[in-house]
Structures are given as structure tokens and as C-alpha cells.
Image (tube, rainbow, N blue to C red):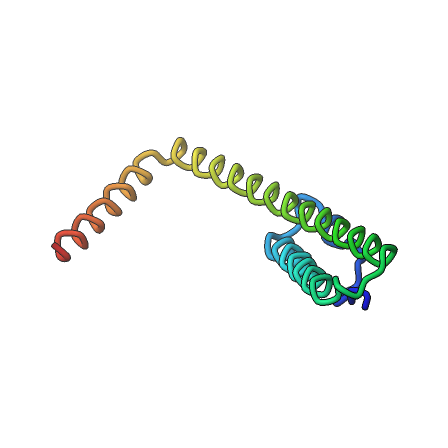
Length: 121
């Protein structure tokens, strides 16, 4: 019994650039993770009946899936880090351009949090 390929191994998740939307990267990671789990499950189910050559083929397929999943996770992580840096840069620029608005917003948020916490206690 050979492990079944539940989804085609096209490597699409590793083709994504850093500008790919996070939702697309997340779906690629999710797909790769589910493929990996399905392959592991199939390998476990058929491990007792696999011959030496089939076992090597299954191991190689599993290693390929692991590499794809790692690459997709790395791409998604890079995208998240890049977006966080962009957000921090925009926030920094806004605070420097509009210091009184930023101060007012901070005071308003602090007041609301204090009000909510006082009502709970």
C-alpha cells in the first residue's frame, strides 16, 4: 500500500513572493500542513505492508512535503515581519507629523480603559 497523494505536489507555496497577501500564504501553509498530515497518516496505515523500496519512496515524499511546508511557513513569516515594519514606520511618521492628535488619542484610550476597569472593580 503506497501513500496517496491527496493534493498535487506543485510547489505553489514556495513560488509566492514577499508581496503576496498573508491570506494566500496562510492557505499555502495550511494546504502543505494538511498534505503532510495526510501523508504521515497514510504512511502509518501502510507501514507494515511496505517493502524496502516503497518505504524509501514514502520517506522521500514525506521529506519533500516537510521542505515545502517549511518554505511556506518561512514565506508567511517574512511577509508578516515586512507588514509589521511597514505599519510601525507609518505609525512613527504619523506621530511625528501629528503629535497632538497622537497624544489626544493615547489619552482617550487611557481614559476609556480606566473607565472600563473602574466599572469592573
